[in-house]
Length: 62
Image (tube, rainbow, N blue to C red; front, side, top):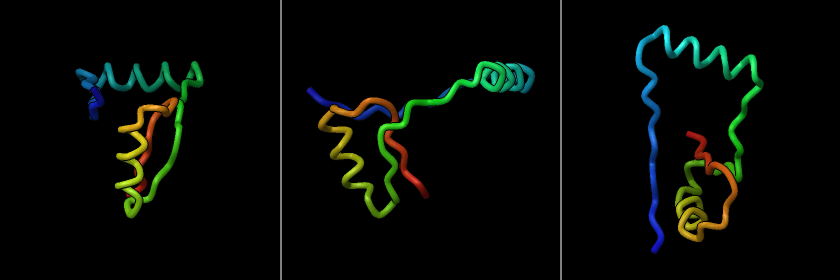
């Protein structure tokens, strides 16, 4: 069974958000990006997700 998941991130207070961003910066943390798609390629992006063979994030540029 395949599915699509859109996940948000709740950060709490503005102070917590600032601390999180600082920790990301200090530790040089970057998301793993599998593929970038333009908005015109949204169908291909969803097909890639449905296949489930990606490693990392699928990114849509708006």
